[in-house]
Image 1 (cartoon, helix red, strand yellow):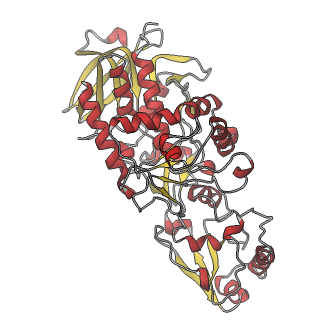
Image 2 (cartoon, rainbow, N blue to C red; image 1 turned 45 degrees about the vertical axis):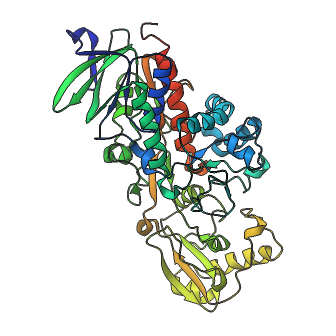
Image 3 (cartoon, rainbow, N blue to C red; image 1 turned 180 degrees about the vertical axis):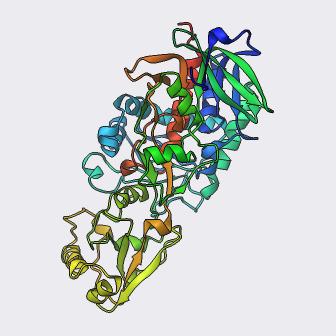
Length: 488
């Protein structure tokens, strides 16, 4: 057995016993604990840090929700969203990467999940923010946060705003949400143990997980989990060995986004117990070129002067396609009326300016004629309100004809886009960790970024998908673990 697995036969006695042992007190772990307690289970929650919160607390904490005719918030603001419409959007967003069973359960239960979260005491304002920003800074709780209003997604589903942001929180929504949720965990009677981490799973000769080894204050204790262990330990973006193996193309250019304990230890423990990992090469990549909105009128080009994405796309879709280009040298071409500095991206610089496109092209050292042809084609169609190449929406189309012109460098090596991982343990929608043959590992569950959830590629990502996924499927895992004996 590996150091991450201890054989049950080698355990003389357990120091502590509980029904459900949860590793990690972020969004997934906290929601798992609440549901397990509501199901009547005795629960111990381990948190490696000195306080809970995880990556969820570090985020703006939108939740991407809809379906069932619309959440309470959506309907209050005049929006409707059928479950089928929501399902079609997510299936289009993730394509071959989508887990249809998870998408179906999520879209059927997402509206109820909003009510569940609001009932915990998380505040939501009945206000809609219509602008193009990453996070509504107006105090409003509903906004568009993805590619809902862009093609090809509009061909699959009606556009509906699905980003649900805690009221008056701006970029600190994670603090608002997790402070409230952790309070509910504590009130539930769960035994929360901070500065304590799971270092190994205890497994019997049949492969059933029976508990874990917990390290606290430099001492190891054994915990028997009568019903199961739930891994909610986060992703692996802080583990350089794992990122070099799984996302090597992003290693030189990324800013690691997450909490310091997103080091993949739960994923590795799950693997050691026989669990299978999937989509480990997938990651969220952010090129946040808006706000201000005016930058959406510009066009992105690569080092060959060629466009590669519709600029009205969500920031993660832009990041996905930027990372696919031949080199990290990415630029935005823009004219004087639309020029501005991006609010959130650090490291952009003006690479070239000129009174003509040719001057800009020459100064930047792009292939002769390439940028001129790209801009000429774009302007011709934009004047007619069309973008046959990338289908940018008409509201963001305007010929770039008013000098001076600028070519702004978004070189990935300089802007260092925020990256976090999306791959993890393969699980059933109800949380059971699966083997390579998709057979459940008895007594072992996972949720959040330790598992491969709904969001599985930056190409279809939207703000709020990870928090919605982690909290929703954390609930499923906690409930399932609490109601299933490991011996079963």
